Image (tube, rainbow, N blue to C red; front, top):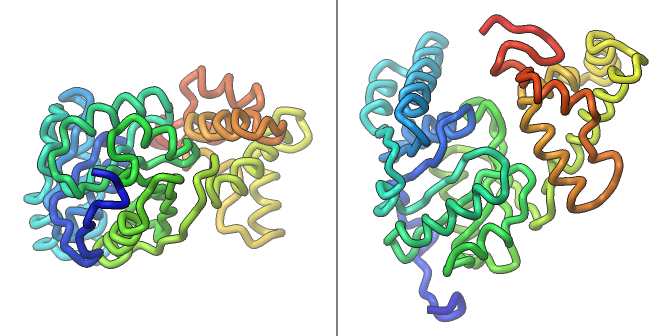
Length: 298
């Protein structure tokens, strides 16, 4: 059935069955906010150890929320009951929306969407890729229903950050965008901004060159991370400096997004500097590994 002929559900029709693929920091955060929003959430991990780690990450986050008085113990327990962790992609078959949140590698995402196109049975299901830089059009072309593929750019940590960028490809049907926006705002409680299908979208097209510029200052010996961060916090009223922010985002993610931006625009300001590439190769990915531009207690 063509996109033009398809009768789409009302944007307010409840989305209750949510699938999440990947349970790293982003995937587990998306699963957590969906479970707290009364959705039945199935999370697919690549292997049993990853599934267990993802579950423990969500449970620890829920405990922190209880300790800070943001949710009750009853809400925590109810969210836990709505979560299922698995390693079988076939468990996505009955989902109304699937949010893919694996590493920022185009070939991997394209392969996954080809599989989801076969597996997901709901003819109105939304297939969402949680990407911070990759073109949605290319990912959608891996399916027979590109009109139902949309980009969702959540920000880390997902439970705390209020913004989600929604990205439509040239093929994404407008009712699909509206339903995804309603779900993201009214169910998950996030604020949505819409972006065109251009690498980096709105936020990272501005943020990544800023972070990379700070890294080049460190690489050249011009200033230390502490000096740069202090300058931006005290001089520009930024809540956190660029290098601490890069550590929080993940240096591997910053490198991947920078590489994607450079591939699309061929502008030198987007190219990851050698210092960043060497840090990633050494496993210094920032806060999540305990070492980046700063050291952390993991």
